[in-house]
Length: 113
Length: 113
Image 1 (cartoon, rainbow over the protein chains, first blue to last red):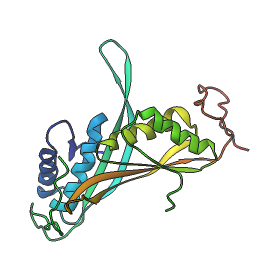
Image 2 (cartoon, rainbow over the protein chains, first blue to last red; image 1 turned 30 degrees about the vertical axis):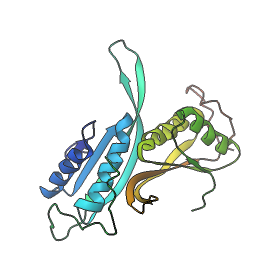
Image 3 (cartoon, rainbow over the protein chains, first blue to last red; image 1 turned 45 degrees about the vertical axis):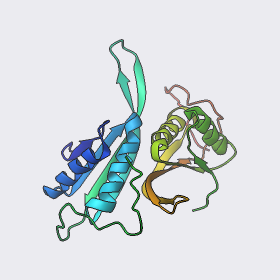
């Protein structure tokens, strides 16, 4: 799988990564992969869900893979860390730009960081 | 999908949930779903990976779904929260109990009747 169009999730605010994914889609990518490890996995799911629900109409989650990566430290010890890859795809359709459909209902929750 | 054989991940230590999943498999379940919301999503992935790699030989991740749930608080405001469902399945085979797979080698005992 090409490593192009991959957004790696770290510890910055969630919306930074949402913007990175939206920028990829708006520059013509049909697929963007969101990757994270360890505690950032939750944030990766938030990013994918926010992109899909609010910013890129016609996008969907095509695949989610989880795995374990072995990291070796300087002292030679290995540690296992969980990782996730979320493949987002965008169906062809009218380009609507960054603004997504307005959330319906009262008080769209901002619970996600 | 039946809600049987579902383990909900919260804020307890990861190994508590690993034990819950292993217990389900050892009591005869062929499928166990691991569910989590919000910050517990990372822990859910850890649980699935630890079960698969260390405790239940022949188990695998058959599906991972992510979604957004709307929660309504007492004040009527709604908040969106990401969620994950990881479907683990175990292939039929000799029941080996909680101990992990033997070291591989010639004649690795994965033979099925």
